[in-house]
Image (cartoon, rainbow, N blue to C red):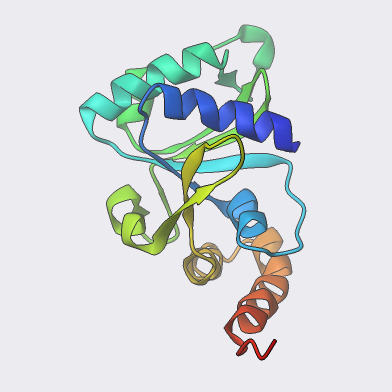
Length: 165
């Protein structure tokens, strides 16, 4: 996802007070990993007030389900409250909205493993740390996750080296 579109997407969530954590490929990049990604993955709080805020943000983003986009089906509170995996397309690109990742790593369990980062223009967002991204990808065990694990592990190893400059 292009930097401007990422910023625009996350700005909408921020402006609506939606509680989300950036995970997946974008979080890996924000943590310094040299990987490519084509969408943004967000884990969200299942709190009813947050579900309401998410629904408003998704409406502002013109979000529809990726499957059968010609039908223009929009996610609603019922979809969001289930906490599943919503594959969406927005006016800024592809988005996966997730109730949890890995083995039950939901918003409340990921919050302590997240850091607030400034991504430009004063916008601060919660981003999952690299160690937990690696754990979630190990748990998912999908082929695409297995392919990026060596890069993520090496990035984490490099970050843990002492800085002698």
